[in-house]
Length: 105
Image (cartoon, rainbow, N blue to C red; front, top):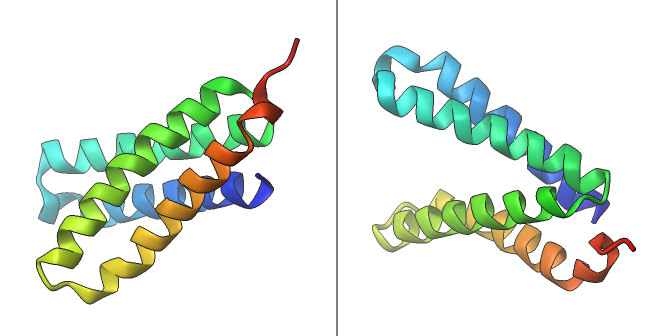
C-alpha cells in the first residue's frame, strides 16, 4: 500500500510536469486535462498514504483509465507503454487486495 501511494504521487508529479513542460505542444484543453489528472493522482496518493477510502477510489479510477490508455498504445505498437501499463496494473492490484485496510469503524 505504501508503494502504491508513492507510485500515485510520483506518477501524478510526472504527468503534471509533462503537461506544464509541453503545454504549447499539447494544446490548451489537452494540457489542462493532463495537469488535472496529474494533480488528481497526487491527491489520491496522499489520501492512500493516509488510508482514506476516497484516495483508494481516486487511485482505482485514474489507474484504470491510465492502464486502458497504455494498453491501447501498446496495441498500436508503442512498446514503451508496457512500463506504465505494468505500474498501473500493480497499483490497481495493490489497492484492490488491501481494501480492508481502508475500512475504519
